[in-house]
Image (cartoon, rainbow, N blue to C red):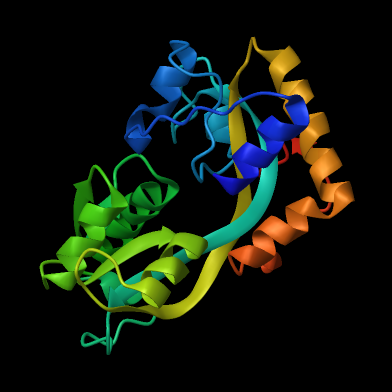
Length: 227
């Protein structure tokens, strides 16, 4: 939100925030319910092209302005009672995840690998990450897969009534992107220029430092740079 407000200041606009379930973000953007999506959405070729995992066209896709780079972390209950260290340790367990996220796709693929190994992975999808963390806190899920900054914040501050820790290292580092409708190129280009100004002025680095996220800084504003 700090970065979004800073972009608004550069553009001379007041930023209005809407809290929307993650799996509805693209639908609302393409229905013009809001102008941009800035909610930890990873820039992937599938989301840009509007295709599913089998490369079948399912929607119009979006454009991304990449503004941060991060990976995925596993969040477990404090003390890591089930001794989870990586994805393979999730086999035979129940894992919570926010619906529609990159991590939900990871778990879908991991479930196939676990099934081949004869150890079923049960995935519980929730509407919000807060709900996923609550399942871990209650002992109803062994872990929650989350974006690394969100996971680190949960561990540092405690959320959903529990104490947590990270299991293993983050992996699959990729860029977060501000999403725009494919037809809204003028706004995309204006925000791209505004982000470059924030980066070059040092204000961007200051915002990331405030939240302890300097490691994810990008050096310039790039459109559709995800891989």
